Length: 407
Image (cartoon, one colour):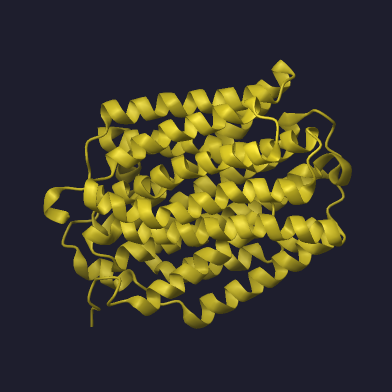
């Protein structure tokens, strides 16, 4: 028997999904403060080699992007729950690798596993919510989902900064990561409802091949193409905040705890603002908040290297977080608007493939530019410029995807 569609009608599964994406955020967040700041002293990265430092973000982006596509297609075949569980099983070795790593190459390898975990687990929380949400709830569903996930990222970055300042850094990361992974896997096994049957029942549209879905979302549809490039470019910002900002702040003499607070400000503002920006797009449409978000992000990133105090850097991080809050959930909601239920998991997988390849594109570009120029500041200018151009593309090419009849 098919359950009724709607978030209120499916409150139990919705809360289960939120718990899972919170765990996913904690898992990636444990690497946001300590590991980049200690790459040289703890893992032997050569001083000033930003390309080497960014390698762990590149490996994560390449694998997560690919796994997004794979997991989306798999979930349309075997269900959301199985893919989620597989993702948590893959994550179990990560804390052990961080604890025992003799070199930076091990951290790069750990991020391959992290990319698989994120591609499987975070993707399933988004897809499962779209399975149970009405069209006029997609912005709300995405906003709450991303609030929980990026709230977890921020909390983990802050918590691990404190733990690493009080205890052995590797042991702190190991204990934090192992506890989170075990709790998440247990919750997935015991309390995650399958939502795929509702998708199948809701759609009468004939299935199309993975090849055709990939082509449609990547280049055949002008709207999908605009959304895919935007998703890729916005990850430049997250790659910057993940790897370059902690190194930049450490070079200014900022301590681990303060670095944790500054990066957590970005994540917390990003996460919390989505509680407002997601539902807002259900009322006014997706395009206005998305385009505004790109402009605000560009401004926040460009301001960062012009400032000189922790409070000012936290302010720039907050501005950047507001921009991400405007654009991030609504890009996903727009893809959900355009995709039909039968192949929505696959379409979201293709979008998330291009989006998370942006980690690799951004990290590689930022690292190479910083190395070539000998200046960390150039990474900020590159990211701000890319965001401004991507926002212009969206403004010129994207149609409004949230149609009046679905509002």
